[in-house]
Length: 637
Image (cartoon, rainbow, N blue to C red; front, side, top):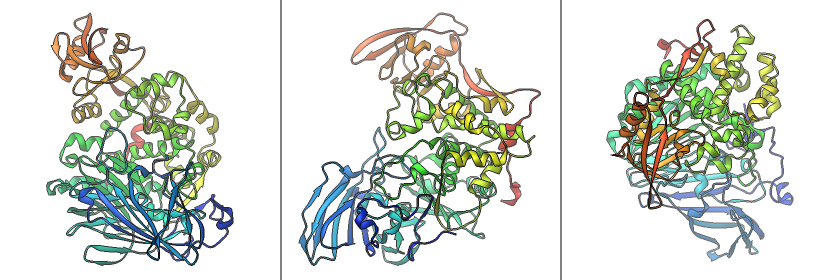
């Protein structure tokens, strides 16, 4: 059970320590200021603007207030300060001048007059519309919004976030309902007052609100409670298939069995169904902020593609929130984070999320194998792996998160998600082999994420801790195991987990179900494993892989294909040309536009369709299917 800071549910950071001085050392030794009041007026949220007022206890003299910069779930200095406006500081009704720091744009410097005991702050936050790049301020529409407290908060320099206590309140448009993991103090009409909470847990607790809301309890007769809270732009989208709720109920049971603990009071899956917000999954201790297209629950392809969203974000409550790498466990929101262990924070989460997706029935074993095959094929075709190691993708996460899709194969992206799935599958298969199938990565999860149960805490770890725990499960040179795979610039992807699990990566002309669903949902075409090209529905080239037929013919990102073998471009025409290349040897002729000029390309390819799949290696243990089997009886859910 975690210690509390005062009487608020603060997050106690084990390993980092609340005694760590940050900011101004002279003030860090002092007691934190009194409770900071924050009230957010969201009644104009449909107009895409929020108004906030804060009352911050202080004393005369220099005062620096911070706008949160480094966000824990983003691993990046991406606090949306450019959407901040209407900023005023007053005391006793008189305006106080402020200066934005010339070096740190997230710091506001003030001189507090004599006799002043608190400063009043008013500010606006402008909600954006979703665009081509990641913008976390794209969080609302005419009928809903998600309040991320970091967007409307300023806090004083000099104290850890866990020592700053806030009294939060929120006013909603009339008739709107809300969901959050924050405990409620009172509600009068459309204004909600929450119980006092430390800044770190406040920012970790988003609020979902809207006109069309529905709540689905997953285990109302058990503790802690879990529920899916759905908000949508239209009422029709709230019809969640009963079978899906049954799968989510199984997910809660399977996760409880895998991790053998709960490090939260209750848990909320905050699901937003809207085409007008940034699509994302963002982890928190006691909730997840999950945003998908409005039609997702009604469309089989969309449901298939988003099947792993809840398992991934739910797993983060244990891996990433409860257990967090030392470099990502900073005492406030200004100190830079170090992403060197993101292949654990995100990569192991991706693997365990994949396993839980299968165990809960959200994907069948066959669909999961297709998903793993697609991951392996994508990583096999990363030309950038010849110069950029997987470790570097983690180190450079704060840059790569915001890189465009174009040239991803050559540059690499946040591959510490997908490629780490292959590495952790290898770990799981290796443990099973070393112990004659008596132990597995499940045992590591019991040890690393297990009891005691309790309220939100952060317990840090480093690489040595990880290796030590693995050695408790199965003795092995795990340090070398990881370093060989993480630091490699070999052209081949790490497929040892697939073969060690009893399968092999193959290519056939039978469509991969996950790849086909992705093409159907995006209206584009992924031809990575045949000609090495990915295109949008209008023919715009997203990527072309050096060394593969498409790139060798002169095709590159940003070109737009207008004709295929003399016919007007369509994704189906492209698929047909690739399919027919096997029976009609020659070239695939493309016409493209390149900054207004027409170009022709002769793609020399005769391989036909090549879709990735896993094929069983006869005579070997089938560890993969064992890994994907449920741990709890289906009838128990």
